[in-house]
Length: 114
Length: 113
Picture 1 (tube, rainbow over the protein chains, first blue to last red):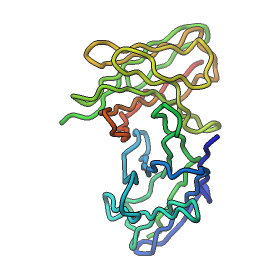
Picture 2 (cartoon, rainbow over the protein chains, first blue to last red; picture 1 turned 30 degrees about the horizontal axis):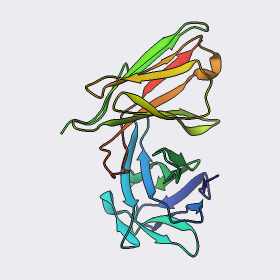
Picture 3 (spheres, chains in turn cyan, brown; picture 1 turned 90 degrees about the horizontal axis):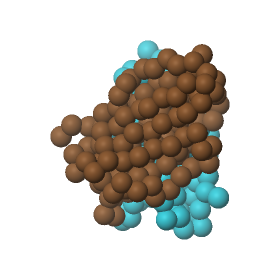
């Protein structure tokens, strides 16, 4: 069965520092990959997605992610953290069966220190 | 274009009761999926509806059910509520026709006492 692993349930960075949130997936076939962000008491907002084509994907709010098939990774980065980036981030993969269900990682809570 | 809307936003029920949650997808989206989010289990897929038909179902007991109407609006129902059903229930809509992207609503937070 497919799975998604997010390393680090909590990541703390200083404002202005690089943000790196790690995501690895298990799949023998390149899946569709997504990053979502969840602010307190809200739903999930799509940050970016990889389906096919360019492996470096740019999303909203200055985030980007690179699909690396050889490493089965889809890490999320942002060059300079802002206080407003503090939230929980979820990596997800689209199931390779006939469904369109998303399989989520356990999430990484990003803390931004002033 | 308006996003996915869910009603109600908050609910408090007692064990043994039943509850119905509603989801209106983005205009033109034909697929609606439901997910349960809990601190212990994370985000888990409940089911997906497309053209009023349940296409897929996650590993949840039969107490969890849903339906979709001709206007693509969807409801999910949980009968005989248990304490463990306390969760944030998220609805996501998808355009379909090859687009895999799911757009989520704000969720309904259910507390079972």
